Length: 213
Image (cartoon, rainbow, N blue to C red; front, side):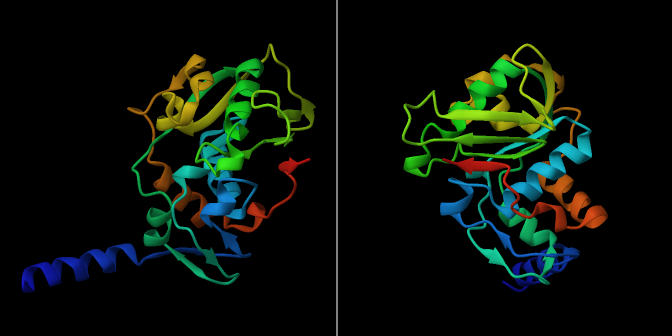
C-alpha cells in the first residue's frame, strides 16, 4: 500500500506540470464538442495543423473527453491535456482529395442530432451544415484557407490514426494517401502540449469555422 501511494504521488507530480495558461475559456463539454465548433476542438485541430505544417487539422469530437470548461487564466497541465486526449492516438498526415474531404465532412455531421463522436473539429478550413437536410447532403460553403474547396486538389490533412483508419465512419479518410504514418509521428497529446507551450491558446477562440444553418 505504501509503495502504491508513493508511485501515485510520483505520477501526480509528473502529470501536474504546467504547459501553459488559458488565455480564454476552453470548452470540452461532451454536448458541445460533438455538435459545434468549440475552443478545445479548435486548439487541438490548430495544434495538429501547426505542428505538422499540414493544410488542415481534423479531429473527431468524440476523442475529446474532458467534458468540462476551463476559465480564462487557468493553468493547463499535462494531466489536463491527457484527460482531454486519453486514448494514446498519434497524428498522421494524409494526402486527401477535396472530394474525399467533402465526404469526410458529410460523415462528420451525419449524426449530429445523435450527439455522435464523429463530429469534426477543424483548423485551416470553414464550412456550414444543415441538420434538416438528409445525411450526406448537409455540408456547404467549404473553404480551405481563403479558397473554395477544389474537389480535384490534394490537401495535406493532419488527423489521428483512429479516424484515418476509418474509425467513427470515416471511410473517406481511408482513401487518402498516407504521407506520414503513425510509426513516424507523435502522440496527439504531446503535440498539443508542445503547441500550448510554444503558442498558447488564444487563437482557439470560436470564430465561425463551423456554422449551422
